[in-house]
Each structure stands twice: as structure tokens, then as C-alpha cells.
Length: 120
Image 1 (tube, rainbow, N blue to C red):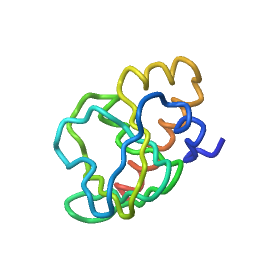
Image 2 (spheres, rainbow, N blue to C red):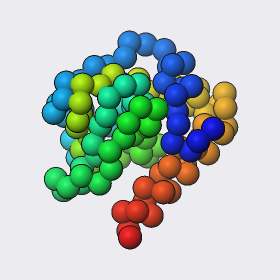
Image 3 (cartoon, rainbow, N blue to C red):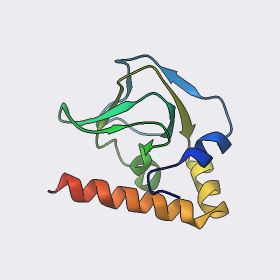
Image 4 (cartoon, rainbow, N blue to C red):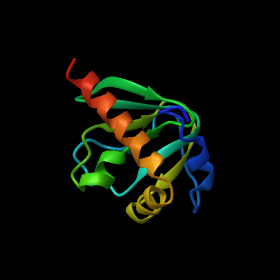
């Protein structure tokens, strides 16, 4: 499994997918986070201090840090196109980690990669 490919999980997450229109804010920097998201279709840009730092397309995940540490969002996420997202709450995240430890490793690798790029 590619470190950034969470397609299997986006299809297995229970519940109703979330839909966002192009330009719509999914969450804002500093607000309390309750979900991570896997992009099923469309694309999402991640902004820090109003600057785009990453664009996430289908099968990518974002917002995971809030589930892990319970802290405020470190970035803003905004739909760049109409998109469908699979929301993951803390309970679901825990189940996914329990069921497949490699899922947790992939999330940790992705987080480490993002943190390294942030400090470059």
C-alpha cells in the first residue's frame, strides 16, 4: 500500500460521506477537530497562515492530528473542487488502528513527511 493511498479505508468507513462545494472551508486553523477525512473524490487544499502548503487528491487523508492529540487544528482545509470525503471520528480511527496496525504506520509516516516538509 502506498503511504498516501487510503482508498481501501475510504470505502470501508461506515456512515454517510460528507460533500463540499469548490471553495468551501472544511475546517479552519485553530478550531477544535473531531474528524479526519479521506478524500473519495475531488481535491482539498491545506493552508497554514493563508498559504497553500499541500493539495490532497483522491485516496489521501488529512485532519488526522486532531484525532491523535485532541489539539486544535494546525491548518485550514478548503475544497478546491467539489469533493466527497469519508469522515473518520476518534472511535472509528481507533477501530481502524486496532484492525490493521499498518494503517497506523501509514498515518504516522504521512504525518512525519508533512512535519519534515513544514520545517524545510
